[in-house]
Length: 226
Image 1 (cartoon, rainbow, N blue to C red):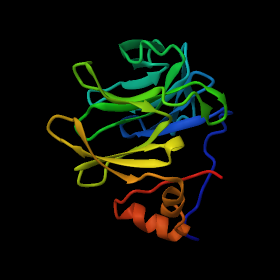
Image 2: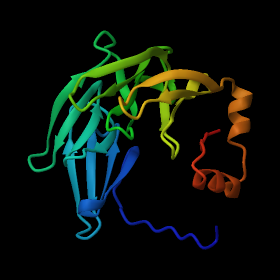
Image 3: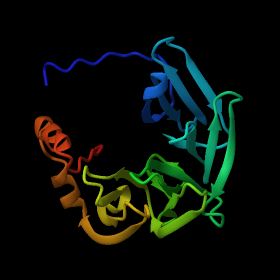
Image 4: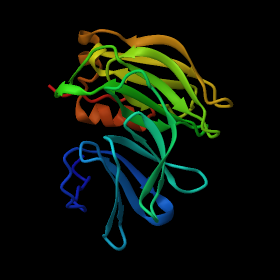
C-alpha cells in the first residue's frame, strides 16, 4: 500500500462529486455534482473542465458505445451533448413519485444502463422509506422496471464473469444478488447475500489490504460510513 501515490489533479469545488468514469478516447474524466445539477468532464491534457448544467439533481453519468454520454437526471435517463451542452430525455421512470430521483447508475456488460431511484432526502440519508425502484434503460430506449419498495439503491456491480449482478439497498443493510443474462441484459432475483445490519458491518470489516485483495480478485467490495 505504501507504493500507491495519490495526487489531487482537479480543484473543482463540488458540493457532492460522484460517478467518476474515465473516457479513454479523449483522456478525460467524467463525473457529476449531484446537488449542483452539473455533469462535468475534465480533460487530462488541457486541464480544462466542461460542464453541462441540468434542471434536476444528476446522480450518474456513463459512456455510450457509439460515442456520447448518458446521465441519470431527476427521474430521467438523458443523452448528453457536450457540443451544445444539452441534455435530451430518453425515458422517464417513477412518474407517480414526484419526490423521487435517481441515486446510482451504471452500464452493464451487455450495454443496458441500470439505475435505482430514491425519495429526496429530508436530512442526510433520511429519505421517505420504500419509495424507490430499480430499472434499466436498453439501447432501444425502452425501460424495464425490476422491483420497487427500495430505500437507497447503490453499489451496482458485476463480477468479472458477468454472471451475477449485485445491488445494495443502504437503509435495508442488504446486498442482493441476481442472475444476469449477458445476451438480453436482464436480471432475475436469486438471493439476498446480506440482509441485516450485523452481517452488513461484518462483511465490510476487512482490513484495507484484505479489501484490496478481494477487489483485485473480482469479488464484492463494500464501503460504509459510521
